[in-house]
Length: 265
Image (cartoon, rainbow, N blue to C red):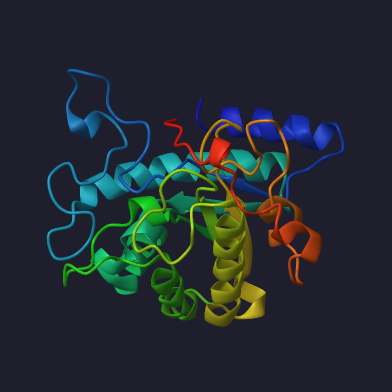
């Protein structure tokens, strides 16, 4: 079934003339995917670290073999439907670079490479949220932009793969996550996105830049790219392209008191 589902889904896109450029096999599979059912042993599913660590000297290699077989099946299904489609592997490890270091993040992807047999994946996807960064071992606040800087060593370790931010977001109202470099305002959200793109361009060779994807649940959430009334934010209109924010958007980008509330999503 795991091989058939992506094959059937991707084939439908190909048949209608819209083949995807890349397909992600799994979503944030840092700790595996397709875990065991309630009451079953951990070894019945694709969970990692059942009897050891994610990586390092006490790594649970049996769990990695199980996950590798699942990822293999998914990749084969995609490539049977679309041989030219690139394969992306997405984890939440962008949030944990300060905790594990880029070496540890690389070890995770190396372990997956060593436990899959189909042609290798093409893209490394990382979730990176200022609100969810794991703390630095020194106990100082972690920085999303410092985490991006550390991706340079990841790119050198995997020279044939593109690295991209698979999920990120920043509030345009409510409370800014620490450290408070950018305001929780439409302008602050725009400045955060521009800073992320700029740091990625500095950290990664051009051939390895895979882009940035924004995670937006709906327009009522603080980190949405639309206002509650449906107006596109400066980050959406201008943040993903080169150039400066047009002057007529500067005043509009500042939050009004009626929008400075926090919405829990």
